[in-house]
Length: 193
Image 1: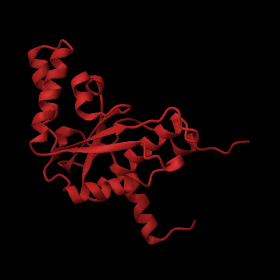
Image 2: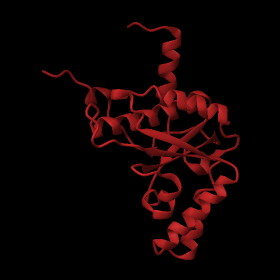
Image 3: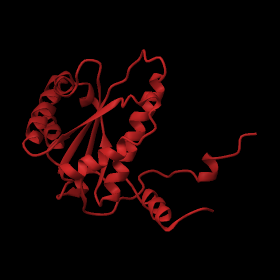
Image 4: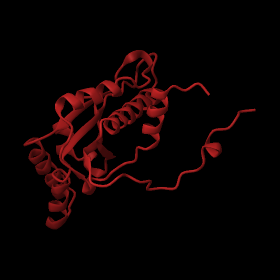
């Protein structure tokens, strides 16, 4: 096996990353410079035709209050009770930092099909989370009905864009652990004959 000390450390880092939920995150959160570095990693995802079919929006500081207002408004429009709307409001305030993930899929592109563009979005998200982990931060991807709520979508998306969800980020209060049992690698990767 060809492996250097650096590549062994990189692989161990990838194998030690687990999602960490909002209730297990605290400050400090990544700085803008660190978020830009994570975005550089996101931009290394496979991207047929170099379309970069995504963009990211950091929700920090006072912007979290504005997002909380949107979450509460979306809950009210969905017919949720005042208590549930207040709980949704807190979802924007509980994490030290949120990053909106916005897809820009070109359905008519002559080279990169829609599914290839969606794979790029997923690869970028994975690279972003792996970079956060490598920099000592933790987090996870969240979505839900709010990504389709009109006031939330209008606040984040330009024409032709789709809100995918939010990455919550911060410093883990406890290490992440597997939430689901996964199969052995040999059950997933086999020779094709």
